[in-house]
Structure formats: structure tokens, C-alpha cells
Image 1 (cartoon, rainbow over the protein chains, first blue to last red):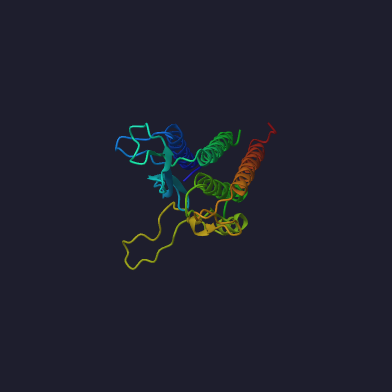
Image 2 (image 1 turned 90 degrees about the horizontal axis):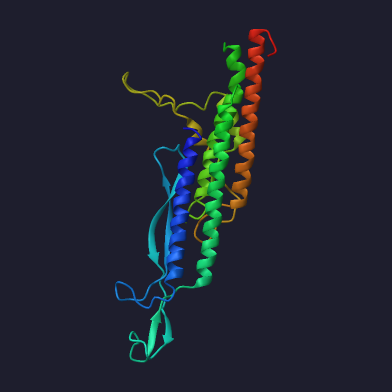
Length: 136
Length: 137
């Protein structure tokens, strides 16, 4: 048990937050994808985090892991485009339920959390280096 | 009777151990700032330090019925028994109770305390060395 396990915890945070940023990027890129590989319009996605005790850490110290990627429920947006080959009988095309404002807020929150974890690693590195100078 | 070396260095070494453990808990809180249903944890520093200095910080004593059972886990640290959930921070709708401002400021303070401890320990070691060698170099 030592400060080295802080690196494991902080890096699990970095991995989780960068996964979240990836999903935000996927949502924003596909905000207008009326169809996808399964024939349905793209559904906005979200990551779910779970606290994960790691074997190399002492008790009470948990890392974080991505438990899964879920699709947001809710109705698709209907856009009136009668000339579109994907339009239904009334001329409406189903567009993804991506809300750009939600995604940008998610992106800001993920980047702040990422910076906080980087800060944790920097501080721990400083402490360990200072410990190495003990007695000198 | 513990030696002069133990008496001089043990209190600071115990504080270093407790500080190091607290640093890990705070790092775990920061990493789990977005995890649903995660409740922030911490240890009460002064109480834990007193307990460790009183000798209750090492090992989980276990009752044994037979001679060949292990009495305690050697080298294990019972600091985990002092871990508590934090109170007073708002719990979000997803069940997460981590207050990022508090965690980061506590992390910074604990880091400074750890560095101060290392500095004091270095000073004590130098004192002992100068007493042993008789010079002030």
C-alpha cells in the first residue's frame, strides 16, 4: 500500500472520462444521421460509470470503470422532408434525438473531471519525488 | 523500552502513513466524481493518527482456536476501519455525493501536509546524524 496506487485510481478516472468524451464526439458527429447500420436513425448515447474496487488498492479506495453505454430513450425528432427517400407516408423523416446543448455541457464536465485527475497525478508525483529526498 | 531512534522517528512516520492513506482516499473520490450512487469517503485525521500512535494501526487481530491458525495478517494496515462516509455534502439526483471543490482543496492541503512531514523527518534525521558524528555537517 503506497502512494503508487493513486496512479492506478487516477488513470482509471482518465480512461473513464476520455471514454465519455468519445461518446460525446460520436453524438455530435451523428446529430443528423437519419439512418445507421441497423436501419434505424442514430440514438444519442451515454456512458454509465461504476465504482470498481481494484485488487492493488487498499480498502475504501475505488477506481472507476465504464459499466456500459446506453442509448437515450425518447422520441425521435420528426422533420418534414417529403423528397427524402427515407420519408414515411406523411413525408416525415425521423432524425436522431441528439441535443447539442446537453452534449456540450457533458463535454465541459468531462474535460474538467479529466483535468482534476491529471492534477491528482501531478501532485502525487511531486509527493513521491519529495519522499525520495528524505534524509538528504 | 523503545530506542531513541524509534521515539524520535515513529510519530512522524505514523503521520506520513496516515497522510498517504488519506491521499489515496481523496484521489478515489476525485476519480469517482461522476459515478452514480458513489458516496465520498474520508478518514478523521487526528483521531486516526492518535489510534495509530497508540499502536492500534497495525494488523487485524483474529481469534484462533487451534495452534496452526494465523493470528493476524502480518503487515496489514487496519486504517481501513477508520474510513467514514462524508456528511454535509449535497447528494445529487444520481446518488453521487462528491463535492469537487472540497475534494480538491483537501487533496492540496493533504499534499502540503505530507511534504511538510517529509521536511520535518529530514530535519530530525539530520539532527540525529550530527549528534552521532559530532559535527554539524
